[in-house]
Amino acid sequence: MEKRKLRNNIFLAVTILLALGAVAMLALPLLRLAFDAVTALLRSWGVLPGIEAVIVKTLQVLLLVLALVLPISLLITLWMYEYLHGLALGRVQRFLKGLSRVPAVLVGLLGNWLISGNAQAHGSIWSMAALLTVMCLPFMISRVDAALRAVPEKYRMAGEALGGRRMAVLGLVVLPQALPQIVRACLRLVERILCEATALLTLMGAVMPDQVLATELFRLAWLGREDAAVLAFGLAALMILLRLTTTRRWRSEGEEANCRYNWW
Amino acid sequence: MPIQLVVEDLNATLEDKVVLHDVAVTAQAGHVLALMGKTGSGKSTFLRVINRMAEQRGCVVSGRIMLDNSSIFMQEPNDLRRRVGMVFTEPVLFAGTVLHNITAGLRLQGIRKKQALEERAEETLRRMEIYKEFRDMLYTDSSRLTRGQAQLTCIARALALRPGLLLLDEPTRLLDAMTSIKVEDMLFSLRKECTMVVAVHSPQMAGRIAEETAMMEDGTVLEWGRTSDLFYHPQHLHTEQFISSRFA
Image 1 (tube, each protein chain N blue to C red):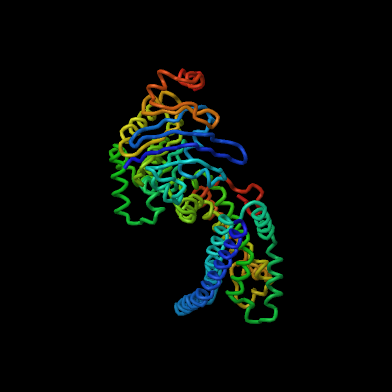
Image 2: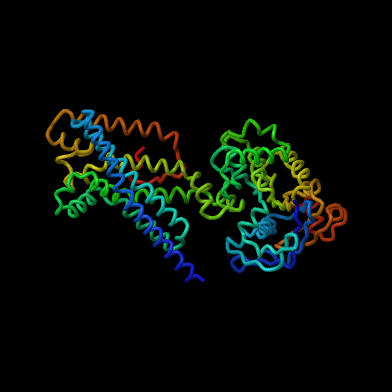
């Protein structure tokens, strides 16, 4: 019986992975087309090039990373929540926690090594987004997993007592209950992408010719330009504003006390 | 339509510990059966065995549990739970509005039409005779409700599925006296629509709302019968002590 259950779980996991792969294969070209169209439109309005181009590219990278990280992390977390228990769960959680604390520099070095043979990949929005996704996925999975597990068992029981099937209860009862924590995790993700990407992107060779805010800041500071201070102030003000406006709205009780990125 | 519950030779073990032993009681269709007993006597476990939630948590159950002559073990647990509603001691409200909560059972079944959901919510609240109180609160966030209103919402949520049997696990234990009376009155008036099995924390509540009462102790039913008979002529010392509030 247990073996059969295990086989079923493995089959389900493989099916989900295949489905994800298929969706990614279909969605990525479409996303690329959409981004190209937006960029062309902005260029026709005369917005590019200049600092606006940097901001637009930053937003593009941000949206792309969010579009990749959110669905993948949510699906993996739901799978973990439903099918991983006991020892295996503990091991996976520890592994993910470890991965989420890998310094951005290390991920950048890895990215540099991976794309060293491909000149086109340097500064490419897709390679940047892919690398940032690799950096952010473990962090996001850990956070969403923690958010789901912080929902008390009584909610699930109440949902099941109404005759709801497992996935229906998860989608309509548990997930909405965890939503504030998940939104909070998304905001931390935005912070990481905006602020911690410098080392990663610089190391992978993204500084020239196209920059995102983080690397532009690095470049301007390196050249001793005054713009660097203005940009740094703007970015810091944006982060503080984000914190101020969201901390009250999405306050969570179970914030990890020892989290490296919890600076508020 | 109310359904009859017949339980015979019911045994349940959880992690090799016997939690229910030779339990046998009957709740007639349209009646209220009260379960009295100390904390840990097996009342809540008994309720969770009836809607098969105990099995899901690793409880091994044997015996006969019949709902209108059909065994619960022959039914798919989710289908069974749509016929057998449950209300917990602590009101558990889901994220969203009051309407969202009342119709949660229907939405879990895949019903999404707003009009159908609103109609069912209104019908349920009217049956419970609390529509006037809740009419203006249907789109209020559920976190703003008082504990009494929250428990009424939970009862409405269970009743919205039109169950034939309703299991209530000490539904008024956390409520103040006035709200408790209100809930009890409402349950009493609803008994012709669905049979109820109520775990009670005080003998007074059993005396007020139940036609039949069972006294439980250490996972077994010491005695059960008509509430008046049990209260006036208890056969067991523990029952007499509980009724005279030496335990309660």
